[in-house]
Image 1 (spheres, rainbow, N blue to C red):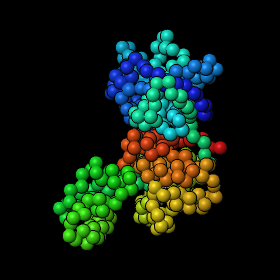
Image 2: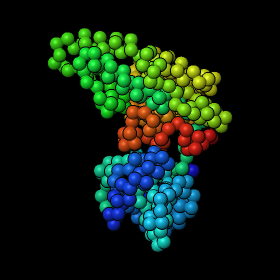
Image 3: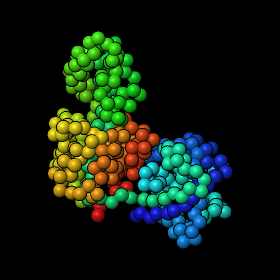
Image 4: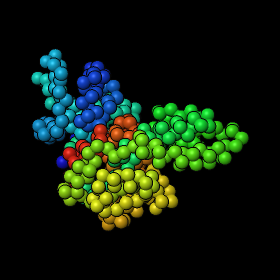
Length: 348
């Protein structure tokens, strides 16, 4: 279902900041909508009575409810939306008597005023989008279907420690999120034997990887059930990963090989994400158009590659990217993990 509302930005009462910082609100927004809320809400006024009526009808179909922990607070209905065709957000509607029928409050992982350069009275387009329609779903692997992000951190730390290079978890996650090589970003440009050191680090990492994968990586719980559910609904399934065959084999260890119609690994493309080459090759193998497909990934480069390829983009919070990262990179929905995917995609 998709409906578009047009309203104007207005100054609110300033209560949104308090609401979005409440622990129970933040927890449910992340769990249900994948949105780690930026403090505050953006207030929108609907001036057209026809749009107000349309909004009130949509409100009755709200798919999510934020439940208050006690009778001192109120529940609120939530609608997943995309703002100005760019930013994933939610309309939150407090279930209180007398709440204005023409008022919308938007919550997003980023500051909407700054991100979209908005001022009061600016016009805004809000696409209410409960589900995404597609015939095909293509997956990233690491951080999406494979629980390997901690293994990548351990690999970086152990390899770096041997050469006196500090690699903290936040830094490694940032490199993974933006597709940047570990060592080119870690070894100082002023080091005399920089290129040789990078080669040694890459070699050592390759030596350590099998042991680290065995001890610290695996397939996320329930992946086989998720994939089977999507396949039974009639979706074509594919894989596009910046990793190699070893990651595909790790996924296949849970017996899902027969569910995939096309697989593209790093060995099959000359350029890596965020370039869309891998996705375009996968779409060609699947025999589907980009607008028929969704790419599911955990990083900014996954979202960027999807949008560059002309595909819909779904971000998952099980890997290296944060809610804000995925939002800014073009995600059209964000979910906590793969298990929620069957709830938000519709086969056409």
